[in-house]
Image (cartoon, rainbow, N blue to C red; front, side, top):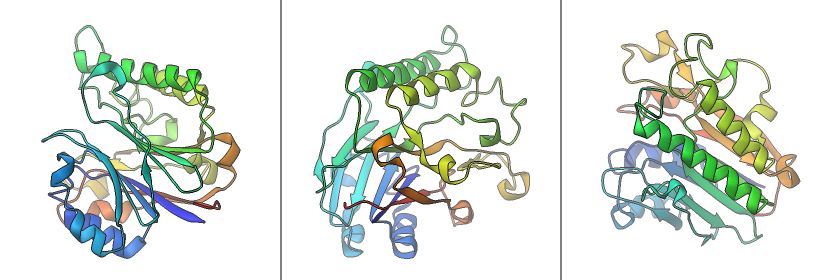
Length: 263
């Protein structure tokens, strides 16, 4: 068995201490980070190595984007893809000793206006998802886990108010449709919702709220998916809401799952 966590850290250098705290307190075997905002050679790996996370594959760039996979289990770099040809560090994959592949994604947020004619970033988001869909159609994934900040809350109970957010980027029908097509293309199983099928679930709360906890206007933007051949091995899903209350937190919190598989 191994445990896996995914977390949009919103600057790994700024929040190095929070990453270390999570590794100490939860000790996932694998931690996938998004929005690292750091070149790979500037990621503060020494503290993570001291905690036993001696393996890393990552893609980075200065000040923006960036994805990293930290692991206590030996992993090898399984490559990356520049979806939508944006030149952004938004995908990296790692292969475990068993051959299982972990994909770590950071899908573009998409700006504020849900119209690709008025907002280039929204079009880039849809194109990114379309290329993900096409890639999964072309090469049907197996023995794979896909995690990350997908920047879409697909279900009505993945947001604090479904009707209020239908015209808000991250929950618009066209985004949900694109994410659904991406999921269907790889026959991906949403492990979190397999384990927790009912009820409101959030992994992100805006910095704009004066009291995020009291307002509780969250969205489930962070996901753990698995291919059908291993989906039944996934269990023990959790979203660590209290992490949003840590000092100088990310606006996202970690999402975890365990897999009854040989790593």
